[in-house]
Amino acid sequence: MDRLLSVLLSPAHIAKLAGSGGYCTGTLIGSQSVLTCAHYFRSREDTLSSVTCFVAGQRRRIAQLDRLPGTDIAVVKLSKPIRGIDEFPTFGPPPGPLAPTVTLGFGGAAAQPAGRVGRYITSLPIAASRSLATIVRPAGIILNSPRAVKGDSGGPVLVDGHVVAVQSLILELFGVNLGMATVSLVDAEAVQRIVDKH
Image (cartoon, rainbow, N blue to C red; front, side, top):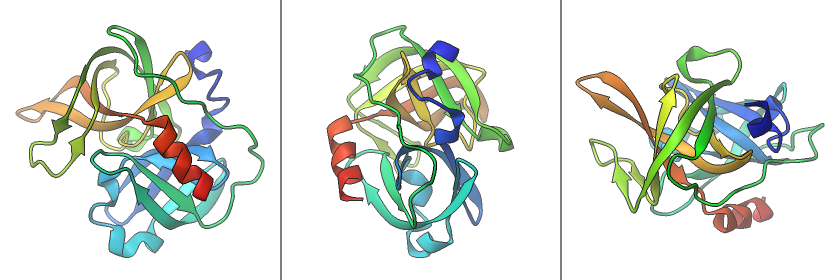
């Protein structure tokens, strides 16, 4: 796992975004930009200023929310730049079948980001939540151990140390977590265009 984290540089890049009624995970990808899931903000867009981002031992409010159309990825602009971090994670291409993965997140009320080792199973053109409220396009399926849990949403999925996806959905059967997660594959160019505007 240390090798897979080498390009990410530090757990200091892993962010916790918290507002009323819940939280999610994100990744600091620029001094003022955090990559995360879009579904967390579905019921919070009108109260965006009440969401707080904790990253690198610093706290910031959210100044702006940018969603990537048609998928479960968002980039938030922080109210002020994060001090003391000058290098940021890099993006990688979609992984091949059975590629080893690490998903990082604050799921399960973790005080520090936890790493969930897994295997990339396959890519899908589209996936959706049961309610169809969350659409993931394109999507990937990962088998994790330990399993991804609530709160990991928005966390980075790493392959060979590069961010390739964002944690989106957990596969459950009759309320039982099956250990399989749906992730939103990252369009690095689209994300970078947003960061450049921040």
